[in-house]
Image 1 (tube, rainbow, N blue to C red):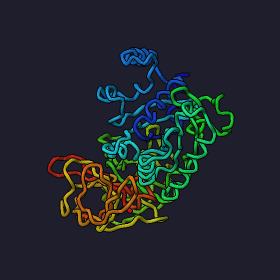
Image 2: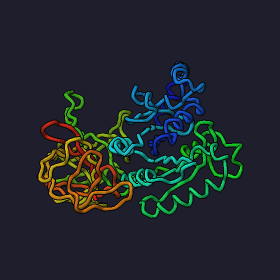
Image 3: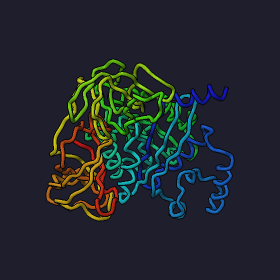
Image 4: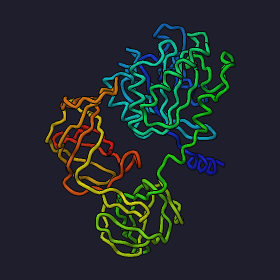
Length: 424
């Protein structure tokens, strides 16, 4: 029974979502409510939260303490670092990234949201759409998060009025014309009291849409991954030192796009040598096909010189290639970016070096204006830059494939990750 359960759990679809909103919009409280109402909190966790809540003197259990784990977060009542929480329902597994709302923690939000399928944008029903709403929505759009759920929170503080919900919905619809997001949903909620979070609200009978949990369990994410263009960055070459596998040579990695079948003709980049897939191996044995985002080992019919950083593809959609690349970046380091500076770049499993050639413009994330005069890029800044790599890079645009279109930059002197980049 337990083996069947474990297999079922492993096979369940995984949804990653992130929260974004202004300070005190209730992001951490909403996550606490989701976990509490979906019975995903252990008794000892609940006891610890109750004890910590007593110290604040509110007389109520503060569910936000589930994610605000740093002492400074609890003392200030804000979220500083990205907090990840894991839970599951009978339909799906979830990974939550609770990200901070302050502008000075933009890099934390980018980090937490970079792999998300869904972004929850929280809006305080009393304040409506504000500058931070625009900033967080833009970052979600920049990171190509496919689905946005706008949670209009604290409806209990505006007497659950439908007109408040509709006005905020109209205001957000106006700013959404500037965003590259095609699936936006709206849910009126009270995270503190649980209205429309997991259970339907009796106080908002005018709302006939789904609850937040229903959306998270049922929103369609299977087509978010690029299943057309095949991409397999080689991570490791497997050569077992056993007599029974004497001639085995497998190329291990994670499929970042498309579907591979045994017998498919493939090409290896950068050599452009061709072969056919001899076998596809996973932990349980051989499979006939594999698709993104599975981790597998491919073996080929021909002995080709393949190493970490090479890319295996089919001919049904070639990646771009070049050394002069433009990208949007978010700067993570307190030390400003240097024009003409040399940085290490990681792209999928490939390591190379690059030079910063130019800053095209810097984004004012509160107004979305492009500043072409200010070339100084510092902590938490978002900008469009151009770089030149030391060798040709095979890549896709970020909008086409978030995995093969993303890079990180590393300071060679400190080994700090200084920027995340989205190739245009």
